[in-house]
Amino acid sequence: MARTASHPVKPAPPKPKPRDPVASGTRDATQNRSAGHNYFILEKYEAGVALRGSEVKSIREGKANLKDAYGLVKDGEAFLLNAHIGAYSHASYNNHDALRTRKLLLHQEEIRKLTGKTQQKGLTLIPTRLYFRNGRVKCELAVARGKQEWDKRETERRREADKEARAAVARSRKA
Image 1 (cartoon, rainbow, N blue to C red):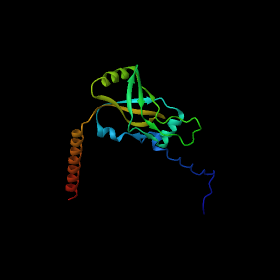
Image 2: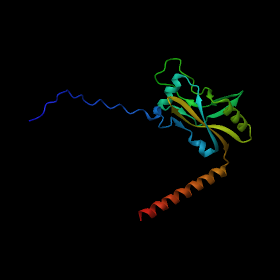
Image 3: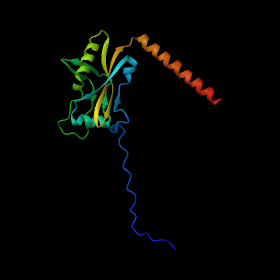
Image 4: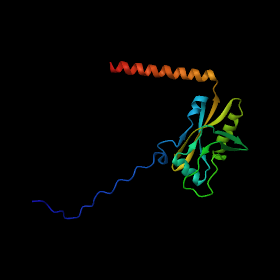
């Protein structure tokens, strides 16, 4: 004989949808892959970016590109130039300009450090990635020195040698 429940049992609540990995901050919104190939990365800084609402939504959609972007320190303020953030698909007629200059939000002490470093010959500011932290867009800026053609070849040679060594170790473990 089956027992009857003395109180009604509620069904389990539906599971929440998994959050977008870009919006939750587990995956970068965009990366500058050519930065590691064309520059020696010396130091990295995290900066906020002053954006309009449609720009944030475009970044969430993955319409950002840092390939030709660079940073500039001028008059005690830091700026991000040539960063392409595409138009938001659901925006109205007053959408943002894709290549506009955007202000970077840094502490004054960090700006002073960056000013000193960028005035040295051969050093520049390169944005390496855009990502979300606590719902806000952050830009990782790197102080970098440009690579010569032979530097790039040497880096590629070293990378190939490391790859072959890892493969050899993996083969020896299997055998």
